[in-house]
Amino acid sequence: MTPRSGRTYAVVNLRWLGQAIELRTKHKPESTKTGNPQVAILAAMIYPNSPRSDEVDHLLRNAQLRDALEPLFDESIGRVNAGVMSTTSENEFLESMLEWERAPILPISDWFEPKLKLPHPDDLEDQSLRQVLYRTIGQLYEKHVVLDFTDHLTDRQLYCLVYRDILPSPEKMLQRRNNYLHWDCANTGGDPEVWLTYYASSEERQVWADEMDELPPEMLDPPYPRELPRAPM
Image (cartoon, rainbow, N blue to C red):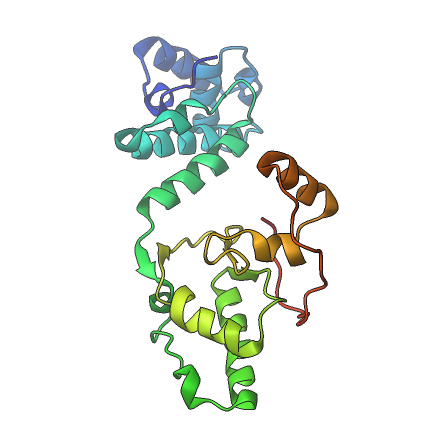
C-alpha cells in the first residue's frame, strides 16, 4: 500500500459530511459502526465518547505529522508502510523523525543549564578527578548520553576523553525519553584494535578475521572494569 499523505485525513468532502449529518440527525451513536472509514472519522468527532474516538485522534495526529514532515520529505517517510504498521506505531515513528529534524545541534556541554564546564585534567589530583568524572557521567546520563566500552581506560584517560571530545562535540539535542546517544569510547581513532582486544566476542573476532584476512589481536580482559549507566542501543 502506498503511504498515505497527511492531507488524506484532513480533507472532508460534502458526501462524507452529508452522511455524518444523517447519523447525527438520527441521534443514534451506534450508527457510527459503519464500514466507511471516512464516515467513522466524522461520526467519532460528533460522538466523542464513541470507542472510535481514540482512533480518530490517532488519524488526525497522523495527518498533522505528515503535513509537518512534508517539506522535509525523503525516502525514509516513503518507507512507512501504513498497511503494516498500526497508526499509533506510525505516529511514534513520525514523531521521532520530526523531533530529529527540528532538534538543535549544540555542543553537548550546552545541553546543560548552566553550561557544563569541567576543570582541566592537569588541575585535578586523582581522587578529585575520579569524583568529578563519575558525577559528570551521571549528569550525561540524565541527558541520555551513555558512555560505552570504557573499561580499557584509566579514570584520567576517560576524563580526558569526556573533557576533550565528548562535551565539545556538536550533536542533535533530542528530548524524547527513549532516545540515547551512545558514545563508543573504544573507537575514538577509527582503529578497531581496542574493540577487538577487549570487547569483541569470539564470533565477531572471527567475522573480522575472515573479512580482513588476518588474525585479530590477542583477546584480553579490560583492566578497569566499571559499573556505568547503561541504555538500549
